[in-house]
Length: 285
Image 1 (tube, one colour):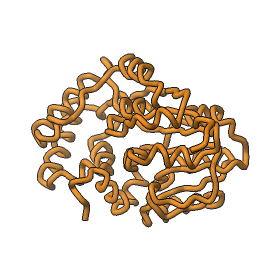
Image 2 (cartoon, one colour):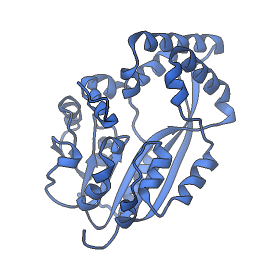
Image 3 (cartoon, one colour):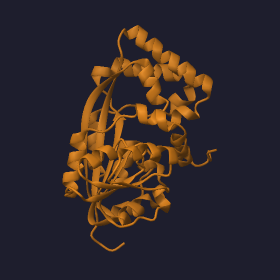
Image 4 (cartoon, one colour):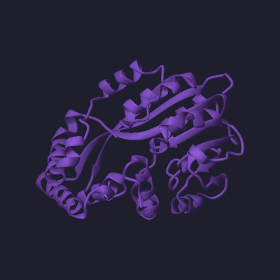
């Protein structure tokens, strides 16, 4: 049961669909992970923190670089799947806000999960988890406006408006790459404002500006092709899908199949893999 007065409570749904999450959620571009590791000056054997590891989409890449990962994950089913990665991962079964961490780290990462942590404390918790000068790296995919995929994007939004008009009314308009990058640059004095701009989640807090400095953004753009069934399966791993009434979700899934049929090909979407990093200020917290 979730508390509908607190949007962050919706995050518990991921543990109920751990297998689907593991099957359909993609990993993250290796070049972004390399960049984050270089920024943090990480070396083989270093221990790093991951906030909300899920089933291990990012964790696998960190372990593959010889890093030892302390993974904070409150979902028992999610963590059980991530545990298949094997050695070099230690799990902390807790919400990040409540976690008792064994040490401070040279770097902390979170992939598509940081907005599930209470922003009134998340940035302070992240800073306290890091050694002075340690790097925080946040990674997420976001949709981007592009002429190449505008026909598909318009069709998907029209389908959403018909199947779930109240959801479509709240759906944020797509932004092009230049707009996203310019907005991030304007906000770089406060990593929480950069991340709110990128992730479109209400996580910005003024206190974060005192905790982190030198915020930077890097992106990997790309176009993905998905069948309607693949798109529906991925959507099914989001909290939004599980808040939709069953009839609306089924109508949206059918509309996506009809789009694929009209196009005569898989549905294309322009996406950005986004990395935002910042250095913990070298002062006592």
